[in-house]
Figure (cartoon, one colour):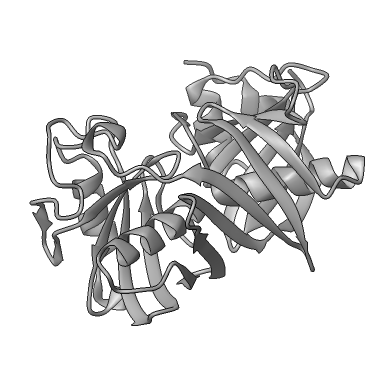
Length: 280
């Protein structure tokens, strides 16, 4: 694999390196993924996305998501919007499905450079998070520094949402990895600190498992609204304000979670072969 072509995109600063493997397979080792993720000697990204041919006839393409540490993850809302924008530009479609390991995600062109992703029903049973043992997911008995009493939600991937007085005062770099690796979470977990501004506005910061603090997380924003609504703190639709900007989140009465937000193209390029020499 020499001169491997990529597209650099982001959703509210949550950034991705996207490879198109629909015509030529892309196989990268964990070591190679980490090398490309390095922001000083590689390209830099929060997640790497490999777009492939679908196996489901209802999908326009498949999507594999790798974190900066090389580990595969189930879902990424910002990346789904970015990939959908590429596919829609090619096909002219205003709605399409993308195949992921958690099922088919449908994306709609909302206009103005914004795209809406339907994540399907949210899950908050302890086995669906998953947790290591049966617990009340609305009030988990966890305390890490100022982060206490989270709500656990799965929106394609697992989240622990902590309601706090001031998100700016939370040291996520210190406390985020401790929560991520808590023994209650056998698959680790994403960590959100949220501050309720009004019944339709939430301020959020996020620690993503396998990545660290990121400027935005689409599934985390969905989890934030669900957690806040389950606690009776917000309505079923709200603007979630992340470090990178706002997302519109709606938890519909049928249980489906809809996330709408912008995408942006940063640049395209090709990887020098020297970056791909390292293998596991």
